[in-house]
Image 1 (spheres, rainbow, N blue to C red):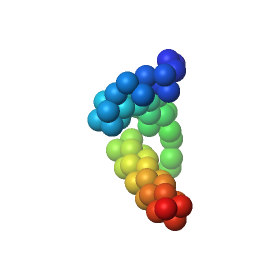
Image 2: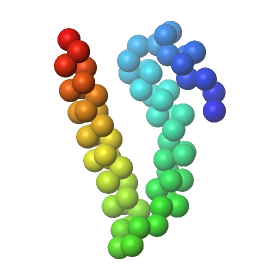
Image 3: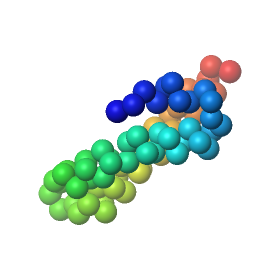
Length: 68
């Protein structure tokens, strides 16, 4: 994997998000396809990952607000 940190400073937020997505997208797809959870299909695994990511974003925002 390339060093994404070296690419970030020269781009704005939208570009950084797209760079990050391109860096992790294949791995996430593989993770979803390879994750076997009893009673869960790949769409449900993907939704669980999305929910976890949302929770993580909210946690980061809360921590950021507490430090300001």
